Amino acid sequence: MTHYITILVPSENGAWRALVPDVPDCEGTGNDPDTAKLAAHYELTRRLRANGTTLPTPRDLSEIAIDKAWMSRHDVDFAKAVVTVIPLEG
Image (cartoon, rainbow, N blue to C red; front, side, top):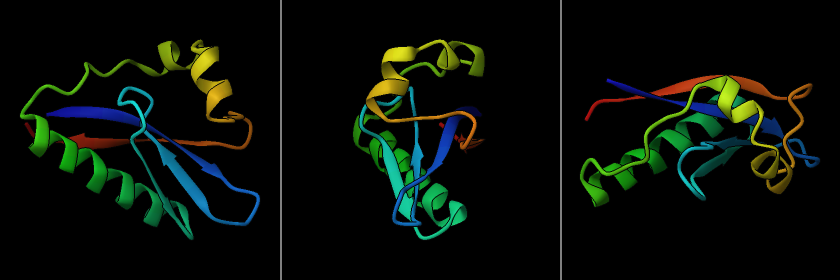
């Protein structure tokens, strides 16, 4: 089973975004962290079905944390973020 790290960040409007750093433009949104994570899981599963098993290899959190370009593009502040994983069978 593969696990993708997911970064949950609050939006200014009170909603949440669940970002999957290793899969470009893969994210979910919701009114709370759980709903956003569920939306991201759905998007990741949809991509897996569409692409077979050709999703990128997941990185560990230390690799993601030093990816300053990705963090800047997505306005991620780890002081306000929640880190979780989305497990995928595949």
